[in-house]
Image 1 (cartoon, one colour):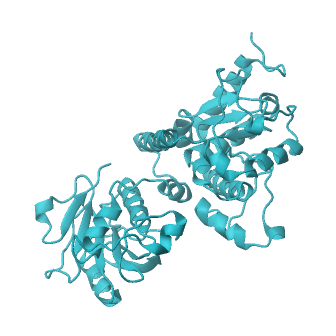
Image 2: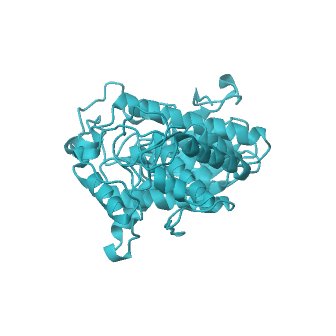
Image 3: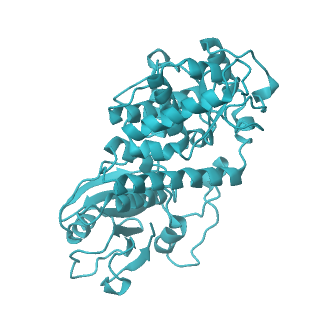
Length: 424
């Protein structure tokens, strides 16, 4: 029987991980399915636990010494960090503060499940945890330092760790900045670990290969999708709203919204005026559009015929719209037979909770647009829907782009506007 440096055998560590996976299956089929996509390894270089987004790393001795319920909570904590792509989403933000924001998100999700225990020393802030990790980070930055939560454990690794040993072994890997420390689970090592995380963010970020990053994003999005399918197949109903909201944040838009919107927001195909100088200093070489902003009037169909999966697709496309142009001004409505809104959104805005559930009538939205449009800037209407509903008898003044899910109304049945389709 092979043993690690601290005496815990490989087979014993693997048994503990398997037991956690089995208990998660009892508590939550969704989390259990998600756990099947996680690679677990042990290393004495982590204080207690960490993730680089691909692998869940645990200190063998410290992990084995935890009670079962704390092992489960710690495992799920790291799993959610990885699945929500927290190590990838930090960018150039402060390592420690972003780690705190990410902890608030995942701890709020675990608490919302009800039957699972948080890791010992877990931080919570019920006023913040429904926000995205990026929004929480910004809100924390505005607080006085003495009022910010303290990070109990720096567990978001800035770059992938490497190993040549299987899970449970004593992996050889590249230690950050070439330093080696004695293995222990105390707070001093945690502090040293996140201190290393702050040393030269640019150097750390260069450790992520773009192709590897794309593969990792695809891996976890596929994992989430399959876990959701499993949940529905077992008749377990929908995910908790708090959990679904955070999963929607990483949904990728399928449409190239820069190209889609460009066709509507310029006078002619040749109306190109070079790069917008306001954004060159940020390294953003964006096509220049005249005026201070462009307007998009967006409506998401929330009628009874639109399920949670379709709604997630719509929210992913909305994120794509918001990120298409920095100067974009977006007005959002949710609509069934009535309209709910408008909500004025920018790229970093928190998305309002969807409202609706009744029949479908497209007319209230277009009436609202007529009242809202300033007529001083170019604008376009974007309606994300399955297409089944009552259309206005008269074509609206603004151009309309219908974004339709699979199984929706056929293209030639839309009385006007342009139709693009997204797939599930």
